[in-house]
Structures are given as C-alpha cells and as structure tokens.
Length: 264
Ligand code: HPA
Image 1 (cartoon, rainbow, N blue to C red):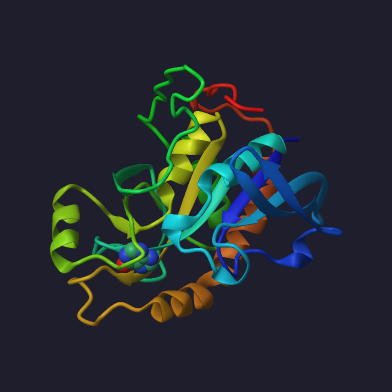
Image 2: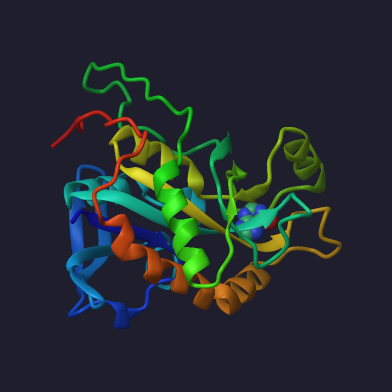
C-alpha cells in the first residue's frame, strides 16, 4: 500500500483517525516542513501523512507558503498520492457556498512564488507536461468515496489561482469568468505544479466558501471564509476518511512519472 498525503488547512486533520500519530520536522533543500504521520486506525497498513499548508495556527499567508519544501518533504517520505483541500470563492452560480469541487484545470495569476524545482541551477532544462495537472483517477476515487459518504462532489472545474493575500476586484472576477474560471483561490499553484514535477499524483477538493467579489453583494472577509470552512469541515473529513484507504491501493492513472529530484 502506498503512503498517501493530505495537504489541508484548519479543520481537516482529525487525530482520532490515526494510531499514535507522530509530529515530525522534515529537512529539505528548501527549508523545513512539518508533518503529522501515522497508520490509519481503520486500516493499519495504510500510512497517512498530514500537512498543514499554512503552518500551525494558520500563520503563513498563501504567497509565503514554502510550497517547494512541503512537496519535497512529501516526496522524500515516499508519498505517491496527495489530496489537497482548499477554500475557494466561486465564479460559477451553479457552485454556491458549501459546494465541493474536484477541480481539473487551473489558470495561474500568481506573481512572486518560487514555482519550480527546475530553476536551471543544476544546468538541466525540464518542461513538465501540465495538460491534466490534477490526477483523474484519484479524483474519481474521491468522488466515489463522497457518494458512499452521502456527500456529492462536482467532478471538474477551473481553479483560478491569484497571488493574494488580498481578495480580487470585481473587474478581475469578471475577467476570470470570461476566461473560463469556476473557482478562485490562492494556493493551488504552485502546489499542483511542484507535485507534477516530482511525479506525485495530486487532487484538490476545493470547498466553496463564498461567491467571489462582485458576485457576492457584500465585502469579503477572511472571517467569513473561516466560518463557512469550519461549518463544512465535517463533510470534508467524512469524504477524506472514506477515500484514504482507497487511494493507498495500487491503481493505474494517466499521470506522467515526473523527473527525479534535482538536489539531494
Ligand atoms: N478569493 C480568493 N481566495 C479565496 C476566496 C476568494 O473569494 N474565498 C476563499 N478563498
């Protein structure tokens, strides 16, 4: 059974799932990453690694998350598949607050983040295929697990990643809608890109917490995002608990193998 990883925010990790979970700091060439790991109580052969993207107490803003250290750490632990969770705003009236979307594409509007392991420093030029950044087979398993748990998930959607930490203007949201965006958040890029570079299968469950700027008639606040996330976290946990034994199984998918890491 393969090790699986969960990258999530507050409210996703439930200590009762794991037997004797251990906290660890993993040293990487890009800095430290913190994880919690343990065998799944419902299937002791299945090891699960939890990572809190924004650090303890949600103290790291999206543009300063050390994405490279996080993904490198998961790779070095032998994690084969990652399910990430993310709070998002919605640009799509068919995806109101509380919707969970298994996004299949992204649009990248980030500006200032280290977003590759292949920065040229070792003399290698690597261009990673990004046609299907999110693993379809893993997404299907999450959707099926959701159905078993009585939680419906939308299969597919375009995740617009903005730089943040500010929310968007109403004009930006109008533009992103014209470009085909469904949901907007601040973290999927470069996380999914780095996972693809190293050949980790990656899927995101995007939890809609609000209609995006200009669609919502009220000003957006981080508090609102946290509240809606908090009141839906139990549904997300049910889906994750149901799918975790499943994603550790060997199964075929179309994701490319990735490149070996450049540094050791
Ligand atoms: N915009 C960007 N990120 C978000 C939003 C939003 O409206 N809601 C939750 N995360």
